[in-house]
Image (tube, rainbow, N blue to C red; front, side):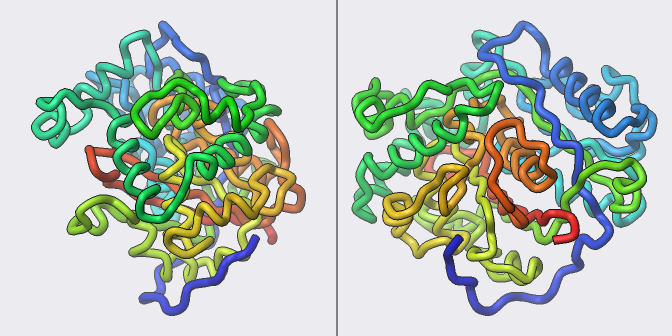
Length: 399
């Protein structure tokens, strides 16, 4: 991959030496389910235990993300799962939750607060789940948006997309190139919601949702779970688990609040220290996973993370091949735009996929020779901006 490592940096942060990420687990997605979020969390935990060959009493830490556990939180879920952890975190950050869960679980393991942490993002999707979720998503939306008849993320991202197009000369075909490449990447993924090949004509002429967004600019809500384990490298080796190393992480919330409309995220605040911690730059990444509830936010992440300059993401997708076999493997499982958005599990999707690629446990198509992968996450949209940004760089063990 190409890109220029940004200059400068901030004070060095403690690394994640001795911490391993392993056991990528997916509870296959389904469009709708009568099951609860608790059930999907339980299935994810069962899968993690089976993959690691351990009992549930050996998991002494949990990091949980879910929109549909209500009225429970992570605490109530522990009773449903029949576990008694000594470390517990509930990360209510939606699409940013995966990398945030990773960095917090890693620090818990380093500190000795937990030996094995299960990080789980899971949600159900009943027929009315999505409407009920967005109806209470934020007080800002309740007070300032809904009274004018607007609600949900489609209008918000239509606003951001329109602004990006007018500011940088992007055209709908640019977003279409990303969506088409991700659909190709999803073709080999068993549980992807959308596998039928997508043509540019089909993309451009699809049903209008919120101008300029059309059908294939939007994710398909579904039910499912994504999960992984965090433990010491020594423990992972003893269990015979393929694992990846954590080379860097970051999170930033409510970045650039004075920007009148969101044109950048928290990644732009942390980019120097993020790459400095890993000792790598954008050009060293063999694959990139970006949170993709809408194409425009992928463009923002590519720019903020140094893969191109601001406003140049359209040129990047015109010139590069974003498929798994291409020269810029991007959202290699198809991302949420093709695999589906299983609520908070969408915030874990890129991290789980990167872990699969780096431990040779891929469910779809593999990126040959991948050694380093970058995961970028984004969540909690109000109206004009998303509040949470996070990211991680993982490395193949021994790379």
